[in-house]
Amino acid sequence: MPVRFLRNASELADVSMESPLPVQVTNARPVPADTLLVATTSVDTTANRDLLGSTSTELPTLDGCGQYRKLVWFYFRAGADSTTYRVLARATDHNGAPLGTGWITLATGTLPGDANSWGRIEIPSAGDGYYDQYRIEVWRTAGSSNHNLTSKIVGVR
Amino acid sequence: MSAERITRREMLKRLIVAPVGAAALATLPVREGSAAVLQPYYEPYFVAVLWEGRTRCDSLWRSLKGDVVAILPTVQGATPYDRLYWTGYALGSAPVNVAMRVLARAVDHNGVPLGSGWRAIGQATIQTPPLRWFRVEIPEGHWDEYRLEVRSVTPRLVYSRVIASQGYWKE
Image 1 (cartoon, rainbow over the protein chains, first blue to last red):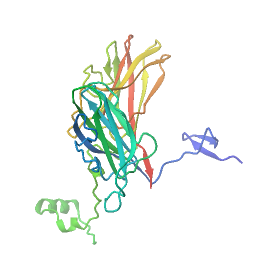
Image 2: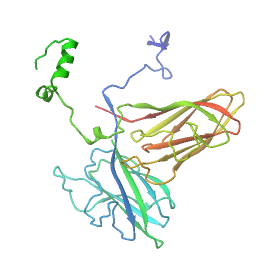
Image 3: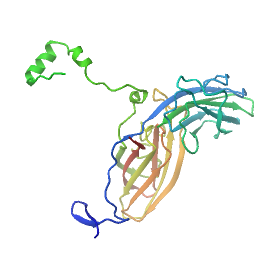
Image 4: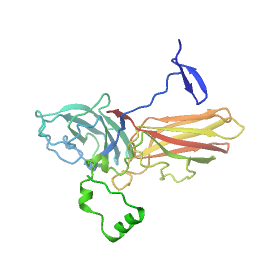
């Protein structure tokens, strides 16, 4: 015996693949996005300079990110000289101390875009993040003039 | 906690005559503060209407709002949304042939764009028979501002609604 339901207030319809029962999402909350960082970095040839300008490789660029499924890195680059970026991540213990030294490399490559262009990079590019700390490094690998890189990083839960 | 039934007049008198009882307020349940709650653009909606209205298309690249000022956004405060949907309907008896492009940019904490210009997310031509609906999905989300532009050699009116969706998690 087919199951029928009231559709469009006045129409009785059989339940089928094409005409499923109406459902409503319950006990769900919207996923907010938080701005985690806005910074301008002077990009030079120092290989391990992060977006905050730090060259201390054990310091994170972003901390307390364990609740975020993805980070979205928006940037505007003022110069066209070839720039390499590296995205590193790691987990911490309950006290906020990293589980070990060093980092996992999530991504590395040439920063896309020409002079005065925008870019967008998802971290990680596939799958989910939920790492506690991230370090994002940029450095110039060609050309002779440093350029400014203005970044905004949004965490998405 | 005890309750007391009072009239509106009595309530007004109390509000005017004396400051609100701080002790009573302190016992009220409060929501735990967090960075997410403090985000100025956080809106507790799964789907929000960002803009709706009518655009008079001509041979110039115009925002859906009608302006030709390239620095102005069509929609703002779109950070929480992972996807935008633009649904439209073009008037006129001739087949629809409207060029469209979608631009985006990010802003800093003061609402100032990080840089000049826009990132071009996509460009296409909407071609339909007359008086038909069309829909454009913009999957590149979490930009702060978008500019949606249209252009048509044959002038025509386009009715549009731009909505944005957030993901959600189940509790």
